[in-house]
Structure formats: C-alpha cells, structure tokens
Image 1 (cartoon, rainbow, N blue to C red):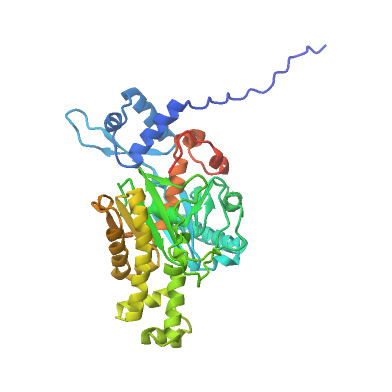
Image 2 (image 1 turned 135 degrees about the vertical axis):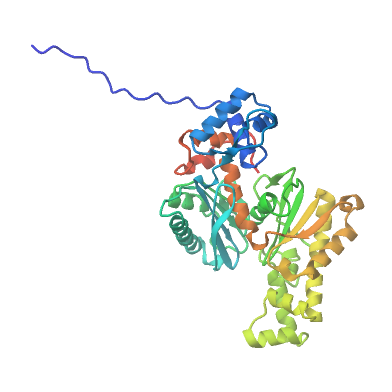
Length: 445
C-alpha cells in the first residue's frame, strides 16, 4: 500500500512591498542631489537634504545596488577620513528625442544626463501625415540606436523613454495633437501610443516650443532662472512659459500659443488657422517669404529679384541674407516683423513679468536687426518696473533647444518619486510604457 503524501503547491518568493511615499521621496531627493551635482558625497547629501546619516547610507546603497549611482574617487577631507564621491550613472540607459518641424525632423539619442550622444536632421513635410512622418522618425531612431550600440562595442543600451516635440497644440495628458493648423491628418492621432508599442518604452509628447523652453532651462541660457519666456520665431510663432522654475502648460497644454493672437485689423491675409490678423500671418517665416516674393516680383528689391530668378522662390532666410547685405526692403520687412512680435511681447512682459526673454527659431537667427526691433518695442511699451532688470537675448542652444528639451522632458518624468518607486528595484524603466499613466502627487515640469 502506498501511503498518501500530501502535495504542497510550489513555493514562490514573496512579492516585495511597495515603497512608502516617504521612502521614494527621500530616494528621489538623494538621487536628484547627485544627478544635479549639488552633492557628491554622503556628508554633503545629509547636509543638503536634511536626512539622517543612516537614511542617507540606506538610500545611497539602494541606488548603487540598482545601478543608478556608482562610487567615484575620494573627495576632499574636512578633517577626518576623506569621503568617497558618488556619481550618477548617466550611461545606464538612453533616451530617444525628436523635434518635428514644419519642413524638417531632428532626432537624437541622449544619455540620462541629457547629453546628446548622436543626432540626425533630415527634411520632411509635416503635412504628409502621421503615418509617413512617424515612420521616418522610427527609421531614424533605429539608425541612431545602431550607431550607439556600435560605439559601445556592440553592447546594446536599453531605451528608457522617448520624448517628442510637435509643431502644434498637444494635449499633454494623452500625447495627442489637437487641431494643429499646419498638420493635416494629425488631429487626435495617438502619437504616444504608437511609439510606445514600437519601442516598448514610456513616451511623452509636447508642443515643440515647450520642449525648446525646457531645453534652455536645463542646459541653455536660462539655466538657473525661474521666470522665463521663450519665444520661437520660425515658420510659425509660439512661446513657452517657465514660471517658478516649472514649465507652465496650462490646463489642456496649449499655454503660450501666441502665434494666433490678433495683432492687426488687416483682413487681407488669412492665417493657417483660418482667422485673420494673427501674429504668425504677419511676422512668421511664411509671412516674410510671402512679402519677400512680392517685393521681388514688383521690383522693389534687386537682391530678392536675383534670388527669385536663380531659385524660383524666395524664403525667409533669403530676406535675412538680403538685409545683412543692406537691402532696404528686407531691412524694413524684418524690422516690421520684430516690432509686431515685440508689441505683443510687451503685453506679456507686463502681464507675466519674466526675468528673461529668449528669442529662438529660424527667423530669430536673422541677426541683430530683428532682435533690436523686438527689444525696442518691448522696452518702449512695457511697464518700467517689468523691464527694469529684464534681459532679452537670443537662444544659446539655437536649433538644438527642442531636442535637448525633449530629452529632459523624459528624464524629469522618469525620476519623479512616484515613477521612480515603480521601477527602481529592477533598475530600469525600459519595457514599462505604462509609466506615463502613473498619477503624480506633485505635477512635474
């Protein structure tokens, strides 16, 4: 007779308890201090964070064990044993970033410190629609990832997240464009969902001007500032607002869309949004090209007439070149555009009172002429108190601001305490696109 032996279910490891809010808050605080370079040793972390020595040691050990921090050389001694420096492992993963413009797309791969490792820019037409344009972006991402893998000796680096800047209004909560004037076929398109499925990583999508503002805040001329107005003057015109060191998107994500504010009663030009009198329709790159073409055809500019004869068209960049060569008509066009932009900015400066206004975008690269006209209008029309210490300067990141900002958008979102607590134990957020849906106790930038 065979004795019955009780059968027990296979033993499984207990599921670890989720970190408490206090735990992830202190973990994120320690990581942020090291990532930002504010503190590089355990004693410095304790002084800057107010955390006790035991808690600091525990959090540093946890972050080191999961691969986010590493030990560096010995730091300076303050009298006792020299402390060991800590370093953030920025090479632990990569972030994909893309800035989509009206006529070009720029893509890049960044490390976890926001440093662009490699990038590509290629012409495109945003009006071709999301399937064709995003398919092109995906191909470029694959190409750059292959380059990064080759440069590391064949060791693949995990994609921790993706950041996309689009040239139109974006509902940030869903990552979907909303009635974008220059993007036919994009309204409501699930940009975030498509890229999340393709690369199995969390994705954030925003208006490109917001990513440009964020890029300047994190790595450009606005670093260390708290109240900034970033203005892009390109094919279109838009603004990004930084308030109290945080990006202000508004309740739906369309804050700063100044390109379609009315600046004139002139109804002769219909804007791409369908209205008349919009700033963009009279001062944007397309408006300058339109006026430059008319000047060439009517014989009011010999320089632009030659450009038209040679190339068959006149672009905004041609007007910049003509103005720098002394062409009076082009000088007048740029000056008028600068005054229109400056007149609207004067209202915003008095209303918002920023410490810094940054002018970026393709048309903003026209030289000092446009910038001087903007400054003249702002300083003349704004309240004296609002302009007493105001600086108005050109972007230092130039055409890389949007790409850098898209990378930092992802990095900022990944390292919020709520999201960090979801993936820190496994050391990487790669493979968790659902992280974008984690609710935050305090909204990120």
